[in-house]
Image (cartoon, rainbow, N blue to C red; front, top):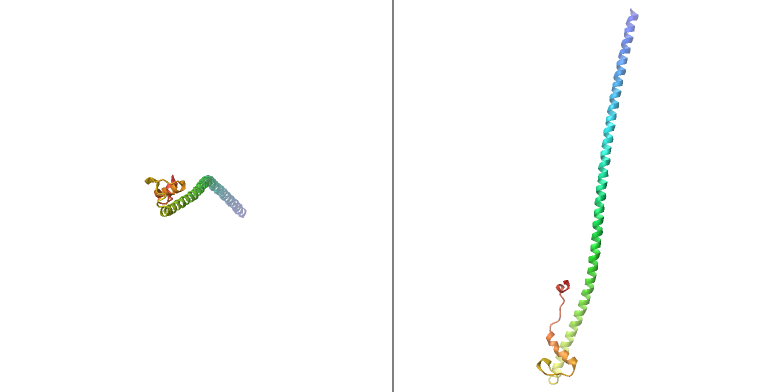
Length: 160
């Protein structure tokens, strides 16, 4: 009898050992499936991140191109305005020089006219009152009373 009980025990051990192997096999399979699913999720997450970064790179490249174009246009506009300003400054200098020359002429004519009127009261007077003078220059100086105000530059005059 003893042998029969040991035979049962060994078959029970084999059965329980078979169950344990089957249970271990199931756990191993379950772990493998879980690992596969986790790896799949990880790959999907990595791919999504890669796609997002690629989209961001494309967006930033487009934005960079727009900025470079804008800077180029702005630089060209600046250079055009700077050239126009340079021309306007040169014109302003020329007009100021002309104005100063005209004011000097007027001042000279006024002072000459006053000296002539004081020195030559009877010999040469204003041509508008009918008396003539032989000297053309003296006649021109006598006309200076018409322009008795100095010329003034105005920024409004330079705008048109």
